[in-house]
Length: 200
Image (tube, rainbow, N blue to C red; front, side, top):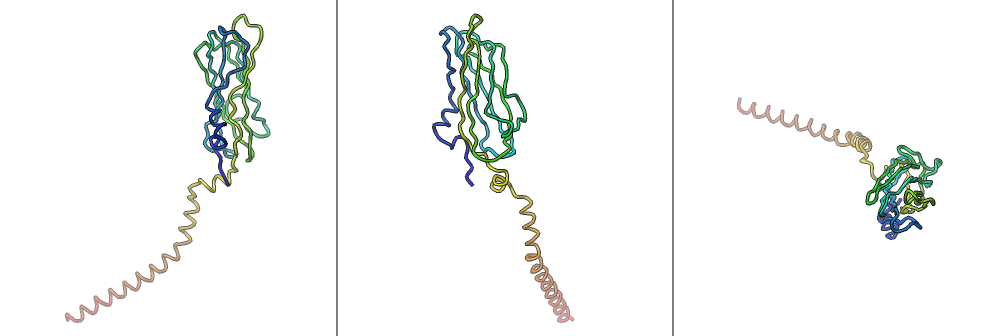
């Protein structure tokens, strides 16, 4: 079975994951403008194993962004277990030229191909802004979640398998060794007795 990392799915998707998506905004140049990145840190995606997802919000505008609401609807409960963190967070204020990060830990319940779509962000560009701005983060794309059995078969150290192998091979190695050692002991004892008889 092939194990795909998110970077191996497609070069375009991988590069897009490492860049920031400019939030769709109709604000003036003097207002806040947010760039949002969504990044999955795991090299391998495995059924029943934790996956770390990090969101980073950058304010590249000239004023503070207010009432920021970040939400991610791409992790439904029937497919993922939320181990740690929240899928929806609120930030009161983000100053210009600053950033803030938020992380969650999820656990896929089933193997297969899953689509990691973008998160949504809502905010106000200034104290006087009346219209809420809406935008989206970068999109990691599709990734293959390997079954735990297949992943374990390929990457496990197989300690118990080696112990069982050693136990099974012990008779085939131990019995010939015991026969050799017994024969050697008899020959050594016979030689020693013969040498003593010659001296006498």
